[in-house]
Image (cartoon, rainbow, N blue to C red; front, side, top):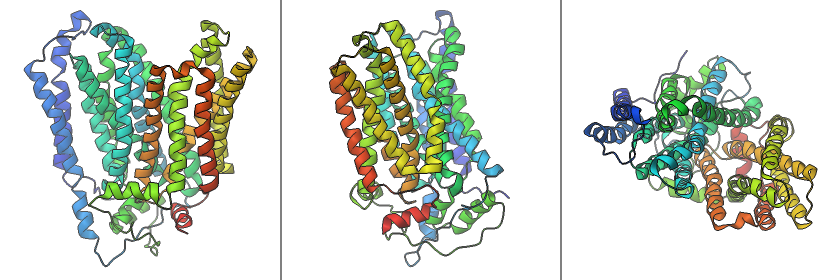
Length: 536
């Protein structure tokens, strides 16, 4: 039995908005096609009327589709009465994984792969952008900075929207924005590419925390941990493979612009798979939509789900707050009883961004300073990455079989130790290939372990009315660390190998200490039990 589709309260508006976005993108293609004899170079060409109309249709389509999804709030406010607490249902936490679960896992993996593919594409388009617009590498690097800035804002804003409007609605709107940003492939001016990269980053940053939140609230307790970690690992790897594969197959014949145009079919794929993306039963229950929550639970458990006694929630969580909700939500995360965990996760996220987007990017150049030539340095990093790859299986096993919080703290600590190891060998001026490979493998493995467990843990630890907000805040922190890493790299700090290793290791140590002290176990515990433990 399929639950009644309540996301589309105005389906005509949603699908008309989708059609407007598609029409807006297609309006850009004739001018691009005319540039085929010039290998699709459009730099300096004026926009024709069709392109201008298309640029107007895209935002109008997004707004119209948003209207088709967002009016659900009015029903939620009518359903919730001041004299009645919401009735959250326990999801079917003890059923085995079934076909509906695997459908959801597959679709969310596709969504995450598409999400990762978008920012990953930037690295493949920058050489073509530099050549066509006649700009230097540093100016072309503004594309990456613009996209990273968009992911920070998108993670925080869309994360909050997921708690206000629903998980499914925000996933679909994020996919629709992907489709709209494909017009970046037809922008004659570099400035417009920066704008579109920012919007693409905002959509990408928004989808990441929502997919983890929906997965956490739908998968049975026994399988939640390992599937969350595996989702991040498989989705991320698939996204990078898609980006590199598309660049290999498409860019030589159709130029760098064709890589942006792929946003249209990949975003449309998520929209077309929307029937396999249910709304979170916990979100529906919190919103007072009890019958709909029960229908979703029945769909995933395969049997009728009776009403269960209400779970005691905070008074603040009793109903969606239509006024000042973003401010209230952030205050609860950073100043309430979740503050210690939130600050620990945030410090870890920012430090991870510095390590991944800063220290690792500069590692090849710094290895040369340790006496390893450039060609050998690249080969060393490739071997280290291959050796570290099986480590994700170890991360999944630890998170599922040992402990979620201890696994996270363990890999944060290993990251700090790896950085201190590089500090030590640089201080002692040890030019050993074996030691360098060992340190690089340890760093790659530990960094992968941190990001593989960080967002899943955030998606488990927060209560239902803050879960998407919290996951978005932590995801945004990791991207903010990436921005800091880029800026610090431009300032030249990463050229000071020992100093940069030490300065990133220190916040990692602080994060490990905060989480070891304040984090709680989520492995094997239902989400309501986790929330109850934090309320004591």
